[in-house]
Image 1 (tube, rainbow, N blue to C red):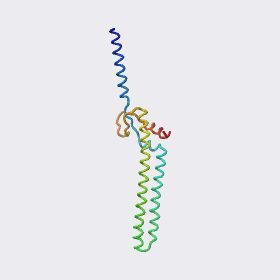
Image 2: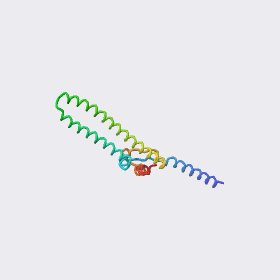
Image 3: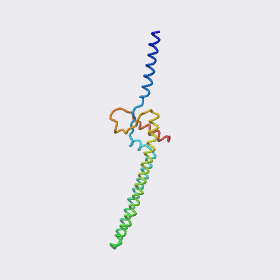
Image 4: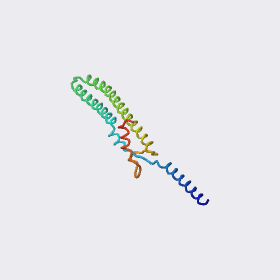
Amino acid sequence: MKKFKIAAMTLFCATVLSLTSQAFAGGVGYIDYQKVQAAYPLAQQAVKEVDAKALELQQYMVDKEKQYKALDTPLKKQNFEDATAREFNAKQEAYLRLKSEKEELVFNKIQAAAKQVLVEQKLDAILDFRVVFVGGVDISDLVIQKLKSGQ
């Protein structure tokens, strides 16, 4: 009977230990956001679109400068400057809005993929790799795979 109690107690302790170790089995993951962003096709396309819009804005200013030099009177130059400033501000706002939208779209997609990896890997949290001094699990490649697979 005494051996049975010892065996039962040992089994009970082993069960408790295994359950508590599973409860704390998570851990912390870390991600290199720039690496993920550079390897993500949607992010690459977004960068191309934003860069094209920036080049368009630069070309606009070059064209306006040529037009400005062709003007002959100070009044025409002043009116041209005012009109150009309004147009440029509108174009710059559109550029900044596009850039912000693209950055937010890419960030949300990467964050969603990271959340899926967090659940799949049973992690407690995911941090930026620059915050982790020692330890943790690098999940950058897992997030890249998740993004490329389109899940």
